Length: 615
Picture 1: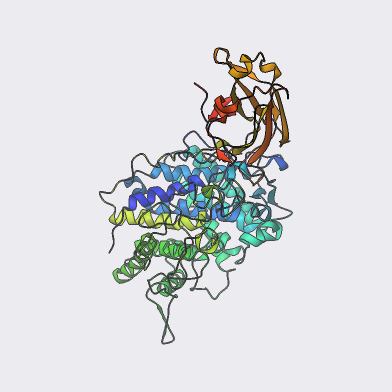
Picture 2: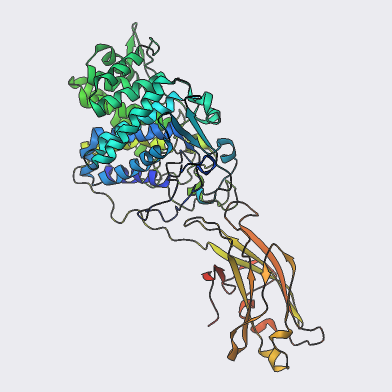
């Protein structure tokens, strides 16, 4: 069996959620390429809906998968708190979960009102750029008594109830607040029943409720029972079980849409009822060694390399989810043969993701051998031109993200455009994080997290000028200059950028002329103002003109949005013939070919951000 630094994987998989944060980031933000984003969320409806997680590589805050992911992450702490403590990562995972639960409290604006989504998925998915500079409007969508959404209300109730359990030891007042909202949301979910995508129709193309809402009512009731020990919540969960289809499926697994497979394991543990035990074992047998039915063995499809393969879209996500259920159930049962069977299955699936596969590669970004470097993630890619292919390499490392995964033949292409294989999402990582916590418990003795992690990424040139000589003679110099905003540490918009072009007027002064005789004009201009020559060093006759784009928004969000061009001319009277650009500071190195130059420095609100000044 291969061995990995499971504490390192856990450390990185937790950090993935930090990369998914929306809203005003705290000073403790560890990713220098992430900044504030979505700061106007909720303004269209008069509420503060900032915060929460972007669900995947896009920038929509989808309530159902966010709540599911938060619930599962809280469940992993509920099961493996000691493993997180052993890894010295308990504070980290609680901090990530709290980012989501804080948002749920904001979004629950009345007992029977919850804002289930922020952002239009169709509009959002038509633009490719960093979260910090999203140009589109972000409408908010709610559920209420008139337009209910049982799935998202009950799932959020589960997240808040599970959160109340894990925070109770460290912040009892916060835990009580979470539980209060969980109770209200669960009552709302049960009393006003309705499929949430019938109300939040924008979610239908992305996170449609295929399984209906009964599974969430079961799930929410279980977590409220675990949080309160109030029998009435368990009774509600069991009553909802009676409304679930009688022929319990065993061929699927836990997912953001279907939590029944998770519920039956907890119900088996809580109630000891044989129906839940048998159904759980049918499911886990089918996924692991095979299920014997009517004399034949039924088993999940396996790749040649040993991955339990449910479907192509997020193949590793489903294997990770099934593995987590197997780990949790194996911890509870006393039958040693079954315990070994389920635990071995979960270990093998987890090791496949870490590198024990035919490609001999990790499927976790930033970890192990030959990990993915092209996840389908807008902000990590860092395009400035609204293009999937530009730049050709990601500017940022999305540490800890579990990608979608290989096909049924173990084939995988690390290609950003293949969103089926390379999508990342909060729900992909949730159970996987729990699996790694269990691996720390099993095999992580003596292992430690990486010090000084994550490393601060060195920034590339974010603002700069490219220039070329259009004309140069004894009367004038004409320059074509393009000012760029390709910021990414983090990406940011500016409407106060300028650059300065420096000239030496020694030859002009020698012939009796002064800076007042120099005309500065533009033959092409995308919004700049051109200043008269300003003295920089009178003793050396050094002057500059400021090409100022103040008021013009430049942001790394499109081909024309991230750059502005100006063609400007400095000229003396036509009969003077005293102009000589060869001694001009900013002219040095320029040719007729456009090129980046440090001798035309760039300023943002008057502060130099690129290039160098004349000495």
